[in-house]
Amino acid sequence: MSRDLSALRESYQRDGLRRSMLADDPITQFERWWDAWLATDPYEPAACVLATADEDGRPSARFVLCRAIDERGFVFYTNLESRKGRELGANPRAALVFGWLELARQVRIEGPVAPVDTAEADTYWALRPRGSQLGAWASDQSEVVSGRRELDRHQVDAEAQYGSAVDGPPIPRPPYWGGYRVEPERVEFWQGQPNRLHDRFAYHRERGGWGIDRLAP
Image (cartoon, helix red, strand yellow):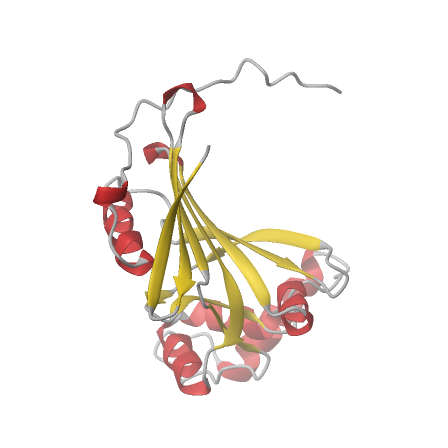
């Protein structure tokens, strides 16, 4: 089967992005764009693409949910023994892409990755719905399973051990579950423009601050 997608074209009729409009640091600029994105009432606003690579440089990418943003970086949580966890153990660098297509915008973040500390992971774990906590105990993420029945059996086992009642005793965080922080070294803001002459600005770390370059589209 062949599909010709060449006729699917959009002309991004949006306000442009100029150097004078940018904040001095990428986190402040991200927060400005984040607020504009939230104002569109998007589905799953925290979703972003995480790209990792194994020790041989073979890449993989998937959507994750960003759960914290501050001057230290961008945090997501996962099974530490999953494919992404194994790849980050072997090659602790990653890229994130936020694609805000309704605004013809994307943000790209690149940098080293470090595990969040235990206290931070425990705090976020306690905020998760009980069903999600049970799911973390039930799933050996990224491992081959025989079928849905096997997953359902693991879920039943987790409920039997920890209880499914919303007001039940706290469920402990699995030792293999935690978070990672992508520490930004480079952050690019992309604003779609007509005729594919898009506006692109990249922040890069310099001694004592950030440098900003305009990039050709």
